[in-house]
Image 1 (cartoon, rainbow over the protein chains, first blue to last red):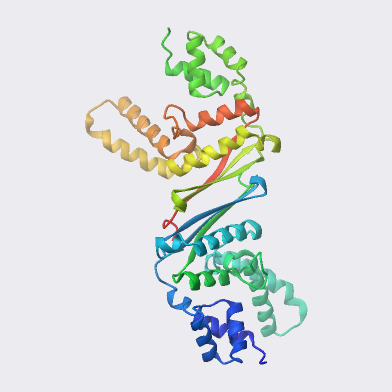
Image 2: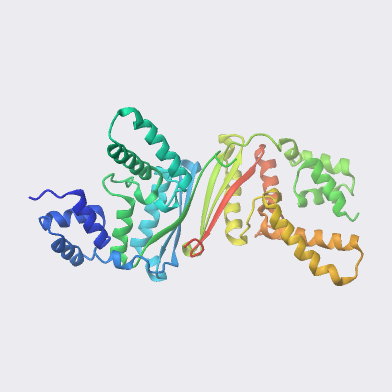
Length: 200
Length: 200
C-alpha cells in the first residue's frame, strides 16, 4: 500500500473541496493517483463541494445551544442556498453540531481571514522570540513560527479546530461533508458565545 | 378616587425601584400618599429593589430562544448575585421572557447608556429638523425633541421597551418584579440577536 503524503492530500482537497479523511481514503484506494482519487470522490458525491464554493448562501438556520445548566450559551448562523436544504436533517444536524463545538472548544473567529492582523503580528512576534536564541537557521525558524501559527489557528479558528467528537476530523471537514450530502454550498457566517460573568 | 400623576409614580419608583404598574396601584390604594404607598410596596416585598441596585451580579443564566423555525435566534445573559437564585423558576422565567422579547421586539441596546453618543446626536438632529419650521418657541421644541427621543429609546433600548405581553408594562418593570421576587439585584448584561441572511 502506498504511503500518502500530506501534500498529496492537500492537492486533492484543493481540487475537490472534500474533507481530509475522505481525500486520504480515496488516495489510499487509488494508490496515490490524483486523477483516480478525484474520480472516486466524484462517484461518492464528495467532489462537488469545490464547485459550489462562492455560490450565494442567504438561506439557513440559526442554531442555539445552552451548556452546563445555562452557564454557557451559543448562537450560530449557518447558511445554505435554499430554504429547502435549511430544513433537511443533515443541515440541521450540522447546525447543532457546530453550536456544541463552539460551546466546548471556544473558538474566537469563524475563519482565518477573521483574525485581526495585529493579533497575528502579536502571535508571530511571540513565537519568533521563543525560537530566536536557538541558533537555528532563519529558514528553519520561519518554518517553526508558521507551525506554531497553525497550532494557534487550530485553537482560535472554528473551521480549523479539530472536531470535539473526533480529533482527526476538522470542523471544515464536517462542513464539506454536509456540502456533499445536501448538494449546496454551506457557510458559517457568525457566532456568539456567552459565558456567565464574562459580560457583567 | 384620586387621580395619580406621572410625577407621583416617578417619585415612588425612584424611591422604591418598584415597577410602574405596582407604583401606580400602590398610589391609587394610598390615595396618592407617597409614604403610605411606600409602606404598601414594602409589605408586598416590592420596595426593596432599589436598595439592591449596584450589588454585584456575577452569577446568572444564559438564555437562548429560536424563533420562526430557526430564522431568528437570541442569546441573552441575565445576571443575579447567587447561583441559588439563578436556579429559581422566577429567575429562569425572566431569562426566557427576555429572550422572547428580544426575538420579537428587536432592541439594539440593553440600556440607554449603551446608545452611542453619535447615534443620539443624529436622532436629535432629525427630530429638531422635523419641528424647526413649526414656529413654536424654543422651549416647546426642546420638549418635543425629548419626547421623540423617548419614543426612540422605547424602540431600541431593551429595558425601555413595552413588554410584548402587555404594552403597559415596561421590560424594566419585569426585571424589577423579578428583583422583588428573588430578593437579589438582577441585570441584563448583553444579548445577541441573529436573523438568517443578515450576517452572510
